[in-house]
Image (cartoon, rainbow, N blue to C red; front, side, top):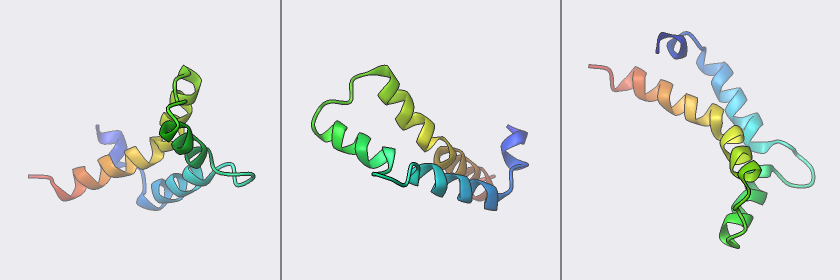
Length: 72
């Protein structure tokens, strides 16, 4: 997974923030999906894919941090 080590932190941080907050109006998708999850309405595959898509940069950032600071 050398490719993840080559991605700059600033890019991953910016992408994680932007993807978590998009779209800005009327409400971010993650907030909408969270409310759907609480109401037990998060069942469609497209909704689940949307959650994964918007969390992908955050997951990549977590993997990079883990690889950088927990290396043997």
